[in-house]
Length: 250
Image 1 (cartoon, one colour):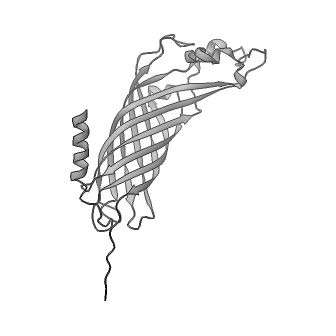
Image 2 (spheres, rainbow, N blue to C red; image 1 turned 60 degrees about the vertical axis):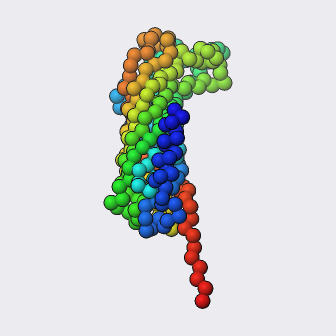
Image 3 (tube, rainbow, N blue to C red; image 1 turned 45 degrees about the vertical axis):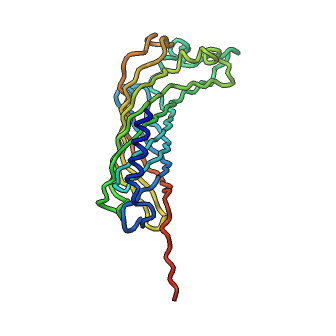
């Protein structure tokens, strides 16, 4: 691992010849910090559990002078479109409600919660845009995906959803993920507008991590293929060395 890290930083140094050069006139090395939002649709095994979701992402990329891109990203995805409510089946009354410990109907809400963390690499192709640092970008990532169902019961009046008991209902799932992004990245020549947008796909090879779950099947650790597809847009904060100004004396 130590040698891999050393080679990684040597690669960055060798490709950072664009430091101090003009964004307008040449391809440069810079660090790009991006904050983004995506709307996603589930496919594969995930489609039977959740509906569409929102996704907030944070990425840090090193764009080399050669226009190769190395980086990492973290994503948090969330939603309230829960299709699979079988974990609650044994608790429902004949009219589809849950009774709390006071004998009244409980206000029970279910949410999707998940995250993805991945290392990425890719290439920027400056075939469109105002300069050599803008254009079509493709990135491939490898990392880890995790998701579950979060259940909230009003004022914790349903004992089944408190403490260790709530783990019986969360459908806790995780595993390896592969991600792909294809879109456009824009770096302004005057620093005013730096953004990106495109389509994104994530393929998670996961399995349930609870030995027992309430409702339906009691063992849910079969292998799964959890897919997410969506559109992502984001804002970039480029960190780069300023071009030195030239001064002339009469």
